[in-house]
Image (cartoon, rainbow, N blue to C red; front, side, top):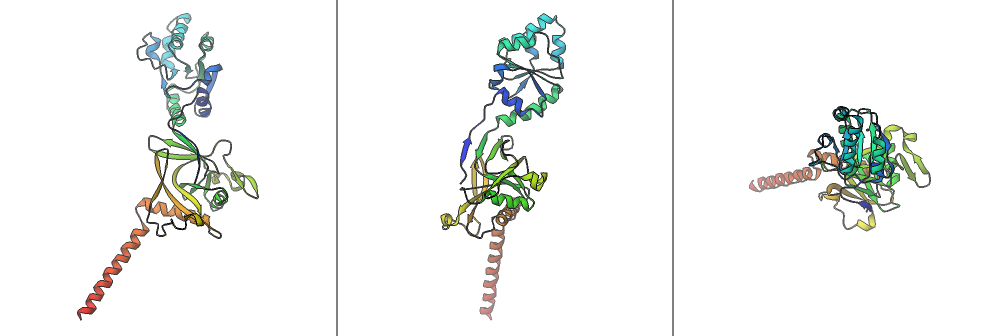
Length: 331
């Protein structure tokens, strides 16, 4: 059974987390950080403080990240420099803890010092305001998403995200290596990070940044998967479709449903994921079994159930046999 070492509801995160997570998408340049970067993002959304800059502070969304775009810039430039600075400083006085200047805007004189004095963060981006809002939504939603970390190995098998869990020594990594050699792709070895996409109620698996692309194989040591098998042998993130639990045969000998008629699920972060148990014993080809399990799941998802199909055939044959027997007795 996989061990959950961290599972929580909606996560909290800091401005530093936001800057780091958005380093590729958001093109953020921190002008003033200081202690402000350690502040928690209270409401993971961006806000354009147009009304607040006019002096109307009713319903001012100070808990959000404040973005000054082209329209706000033009408005501020309609005032003398001293007055425009006072209008921005008023945002800090009313709780604003982060201001982001969009469109590659230059930092107005005195604004960096005002942010530092308020213990707030000041950043710049060369993205257009609308593009920054669009990209920041992805970053903020990812950061706030419920998450879990599991001691398990995840592989993309036949296009499905398959998480392999089980006690140490059952061969999770060796099985994953065999799957990779057969054309499948590694997502995470031994330690899988899971995030929940609340919008579609689905889970996505990935490796931690430190261990991404690496595997530990007993007797060989640490290997870099893309260096050996090529870049197509790894995936950055994959939707989690199936959980495979490896159990010692002696531990589950009396529990297994040999027909496969029973359906089991594993609940992770409130999402039910189909789960199967594969007994491990000497000589069993786990690579072949997991590939077959993935293909079986795809058939089930498409509406085909081999158990029902076979049951229908057996029933039809029994009915035909009874009819034939009745005809024989009627002669």
